[in-house]
Figure (cartoon, rainbow, N blue to C red):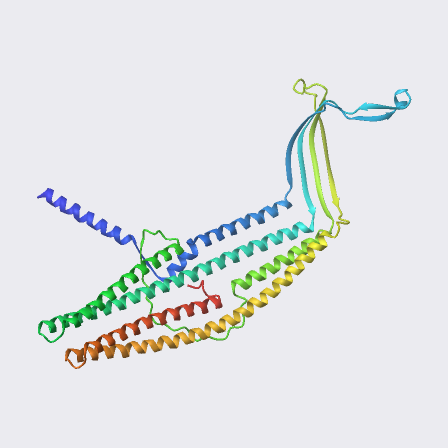
Length: 444
């Protein structure tokens, strides 16, 4: 008995573990969670995030210019032909000019070099420009998130639409099965014709084919949702939000699109172009830097530096370096003019983009209101079609109306339900478009 109890207990524990494992492998996903996953895990967002990290190091790279630069070095030179200098012969008690070798065959110098920029206006502007580029990269990351959230929301709504269609076709399949039962009983009693039963059976088979296609389509849409959100394809996903009717708050006029990420990016690009123009003009300003060097130099005609300790002598200096640009063939002026033109182009693009947003927002608002009215009408049509189908079914059972009227009524009900699903999908997409134009996509 103890052995049997142990076996039963072990079996129960194993089944519980398997049941828990099966439950853990299912991911229940709301629209908000799907958007959050997409904003964090989508490969385009991940790459944009890495690009933002790269720009941070680019800022540090630019800032490093203002720190002291220290370099250690060691140079060994062998002069197979020693340089010569001409000296007047009177120095040596002779006439004419006498060539004298300057240096030795071996020259070995080892030491340190140091430099520090004291003033260079272009470098300060370059640092500020690098920070603007970092901000621009962060805005690009935000724009990528918005694009992914928009795509994830569209696919999520599409999955909800397909799932609702499957549900409605399933109800239609139940009605068809009930009708087949009625026809079967009537046929057995000699009331209904066999051809009527065959017609309804064909309708059921067509419904099953349509249902199978929708199930396959739903699986493909779920796979696309997993891809956009960066989820493992092996995980089973169930969407918890349903495609239910909901109405946005009253849509008001919107004339300020400065909060849109696209506008912010254009503003930041205009700042970058302005800084580039200023950097080109500031290149005309003088620059001042400090430098210093300490090294030991050894000059020998024979390579015997490692014999004795008096083979090197110390050399060192510190100094200031002033550079004053005088003429560059108008190169800096030409660069500044290019950035000035780029700035004008960006200003035109910003105005055009803002005007386009205004037009799109007006269109999206009108589209949302139209889709809202269509959804309400389709909702009313379903109630009418359901009432008509129930009445027709009751009349058919009483042999008041023919089978063709009942099938026509059933088709009208199915069409009304599917049209309502399509109207809801269009309403959700219109609502999504309005949120996009208002810059509210990341508010989930």
